[in-house]
Image (cartoon, rainbow, N blue to C red; front, side):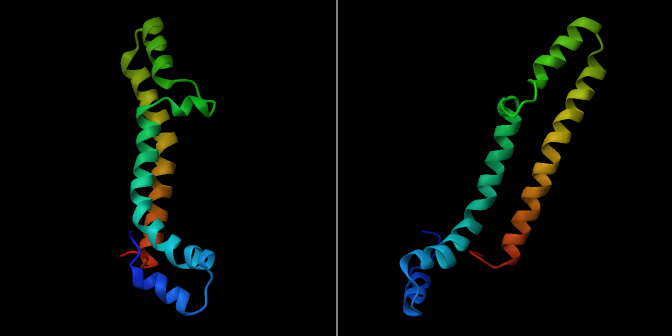
Length: 110
């Protein structure tokens, strides 16, 4: 729906097959429109769920709670939790921003 019908017709007019029209005309334009939402959902899932534990990293909040319970060093434990989330999420966020800017500079769907 993000790709105007004229774009598809133009692809067919120059002799592209249906698959080529999809690959070279529809997909890049549709991806440019959908990418920001997809990137935001990925970051949301990483922040709000324990998807991180599926990758092999222990549930950070649970570990932080245990450290606070053992040593009563709340500030230090919460700072380490913040640093761990920052180390995990900042590269993903920067990569998403870079990819979104690159897609937007290609002028697809904008």
